Image (cartoon, rainbow over all chains, first blue to last red; front, side, top):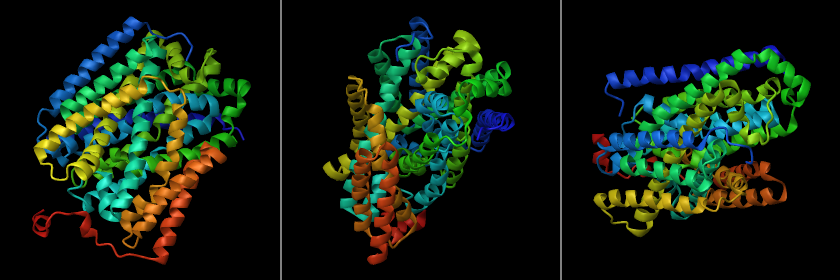
Length: 40
Length: 480
């Protein structure tokens, strides 16, 4: 049972988008924590 | 690894020197405000969501994730990388446990504390043997991985590369304790995630998923097969191993104690979600090998070779920085957490019960240094069978899943049953490792452990008072 190219494409694009979003979300959380005095 | 290095030794030294200086300076800078034992060991118990999420994610992204994910995709195809990504289940399942741990033990220090207060001294000692054995196995594997990877990527001698990575991590952990570890983890996680995305985008735009699929289908169709039996077996073993590693290890417990109230659940959940796609993104690079027509002499070098082909020397530099960050983010966490376990459960718990805080703060630094030296000495001979040692620990860690998880929620657990579950689960798991194979060790250990916990609790239930997990006086509890 071979994975179709469309599903492989979807898997890779979705995974890459999630990894790309992670540092942005981390930085946003960092700014929010810093502003709110809850970083440490 | 016998392939030629993808970077020159001079460039390797430059990157090593630059990042070593940054991590050590940052460790000192972040740790300069750490006050007392809580400050050094648990970053003052006030770590927020951003730093908490980053440290949980970066610690779980080791050199294995960045280097072994492409290797597994190269050997086991789709299920290799998807199976690896299920390692995140351990982080996600630990989220409610982290919340519960913080509620039950607001002043706790280590996972050993919990086992001692919940099940008594015998269970505590059995747990310490398991936990320290695993911690040393992981410490040595990370130190060795540092030497091997630096040697493979730059040609720098194994002993020198290994010594540098161990010395750098020991230095900044020593200077700043958990504050330094968590602060550097934040930067390291940004570097790791950004580096992986750059490589993935290059692979998608330069090769294309459809071309990649066509070429793999022609040359190695089994990699695209969704019913690849060896890979499906790997998936379950990896899942269980990951859950056992996270549930018992003080690396994750110390963070549950260090996070601000209300942060633990969210931090572990988000970290698990962030981590899930990382092995897929790092892993699919290996599927571009047929399309790029790369000659891969050893499977473990597939990641750097693809990066070098896509981005030239710049790609290899990027992989080196990502791998160095991934190694440091795990090695420092493990050093700090193992040092906490040795300090609290061995030094204070067994040798110096009356030790005051000033003495413990000093001892914490000496223990971190001592662990670093021991790791360095054990890494020096470059034991080639260390991968087998790590598989070996699967039986140990999986036997703790039930005593830890059930012990946090179920007041009727029989303490002797929990002790036997850890001891016999490990023993039978090890027997199955030798008699059947590495892939069943964790499964058998968890099954035996679960059976013993359930059976002994059914036969002789106890009624545990949860307040015993928070030994502070009632007045102090009410004041909190």
